[in-house]
Amino acid sequence: MDIPERFLDRSSESDEDDKWSQTVRAENGLDVKLGRGQIPPKGFKMITGPQNGEVKLGFCLSKGTLEVEVICARDICPKEKDEPDTYVKTYLRDGDKWLQKRKTRVVRHSRNPQYRQTLKYSSCDALGRNLLIMLWEKKQGFESNQGLGGAVVNLDLLPLTRLTVDWYTLFPIHTLGTQTADSP
Image 1 (cartoon, rainbow, N blue to C red):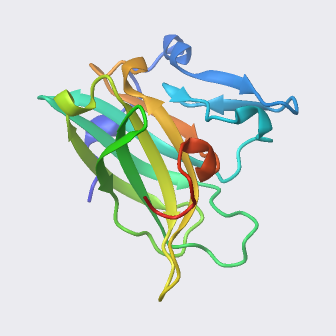
Image 2: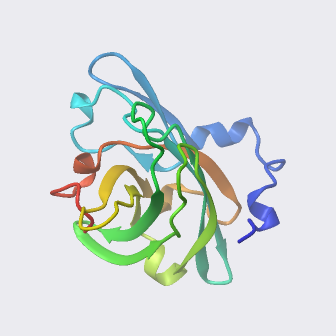
């Protein structure tokens, strides 16, 4: 699937867009850059920094539909010998409620996978909620898929009337309000 042209054009971005990003400091003094609208995970003070790479996402509200472009990820599983087969799941969340789910196809054998896939939500379902983004490793056979990391984005903090593209730091799955690293 090709990326729509509006997700590739970053010429409309300016220094003013930096106000949507933030840098937070972990307990150990390490600075971690968060993407636009990204919420630091619960228990952030215990995290030593980015655990497992970043995912590049684009957001745009068009004709009553929130389009979430899952573009790519980078620096996935840097310490593992084998390159993982990965996919991305997104969930709309309203407080602790897990609502609608969307997911990308699996990209095989890559630490820097290119997803280039658009996930769509009705704007009336999405506005006022958070979007949970989770990166998963697809396991073979009877093994459970493994959560590699995730991010939470407050959709109300994004300027959805225009394209917003940014890198989102992935944090451990257990810090995102899930009880386990297994797929919910």
